[in-house]
Each structure stands twice: as structure tokens, then as C-alpha cells.
Image (cartoon, rainbow, N blue to C red):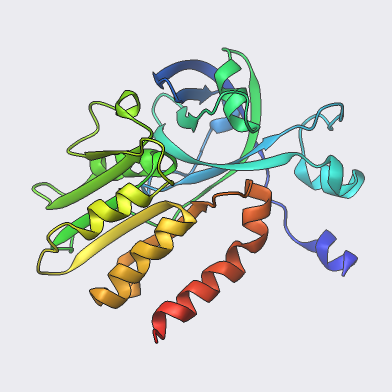
Length: 277
């Protein structure tokens, strides 16, 4: 088993240098990365491209140049960097700049505090991008629904929509201060202290469901994602290939705990909804 793990290919990390940062809202910080480490960054196919940022653990010295292969070979697992997944808000290949939006909850977590304090010249390493969704030009209409964690991908999707596309876009945020301007025709839903996704689910379920073939993107907290997936698959019979549905996070779990159980959880949800009682 140990030999198999060593032989598994480790994706080479890229080095990003903070170019600038700005507060988009009181709870979202935008960080723009640049530098030679972004040369040839292969983004652009999908609107939900994501990267896995590698945050160093305090007090651990890592090899220079930063090499995840060496880190996994030479350091115990508890010293490996902490991984956090973030959606690419924008990739400007001409300028060589990668924009990432971070939800910030004060001093909670790892990535949010880093983004809040990031200054030009700061260095961060990451792997990626991954991705799998972009709006289909063949769809009769589009549904985009998510919370703050999905807002960067929803924003990118709105910018990529075919001309004259029929779009229903719903985003749940904490309150009016977290609304963003200039990202297209979005219905903003305010959480106002309710459970994440509860108000969003009510609104989406209450909309008029158009005729024709939809293409749906539903991402965010796993609980409401499960609910809306069932609504689309079971209540409306939308084929799974026309859905991009995923829990970016789960209430009560950090990313390490959620990622460890996500595959099993997704399989159970799919089995339940493909074979409803």
C-alpha cells in the first residue's frame, strides 16, 4: 500500500504572487495572483474552474523550490500543507493574472484570514485547475443557484452565457451588504440568520419551471444541494447529464472532513434519488 501511494503521480504545484487585493463586499475578499508560475495556466474551457491552494503549516520548513512530490516523500502527513479548494473567478491569459474570491468569516478558518491579510508580493502555491461545467449553447434555458461559495462560478457562467440566453440565476447571501453589482441579472436572496440554503431552496422551488431542455448548475452547502438535486431529478425529470450539482461544503464540517466523506455521501444521495420510494 505504501509503495502504491509513493508511485501515484503528484500534480506539480504552481507559484502565485499576490498582485493586488480588494474587498468586493464586507465578507468577500478578491485576490489577484500573477508571476512566472502562472505561465501556461490551462484555464478557459470551463466556468467552474477551481484550484487547490496549499497553505503551509506553521513551523514547518518546506523544500525550495516548493515540490509536493518531495514533501510527500520526505515529511510526515501531518506536516503536509493544508489544502483548500477555491473557484477561479477569472483568468486573464494576456495579463497573466488569476483572480480568486474568498469568503471571509473574520478569523475563522485558514483561507479567509490569509486572503484578508494578503498583500502584494505574498506567495502562495496551488495545484489545478479542475473543472467540468460551462453553459451549454444547446439548452433552452439555464438555472444557476448557489450560495456565496458558488458565486464566483455563477458570475463566470453569466459572463459566458450565449447571446439572448434564457437564464434564472439565484444567489443566497447573508444580507443586502453581500450583494455584488455588475455580474448580470441575479435574484439575490438574503439568509438573514436562517440555515444556509433554506431561503434559496424555497425561492427556487417556487419559481415557474419553464418548458424545454434546461441546463442547471447548483452548488453550495451540501444540504440544500441535495434537496434541489432531488427536485430537479425526481420532481421534474431532468437527466443527470444536464445537471452540474455538487456540495462545495457541508454545514458542521471543515473541508478536510467533508472531502473525506464526500464521495460516499454523493453516492448515497444519487442512489436515493435515482430510486425514490
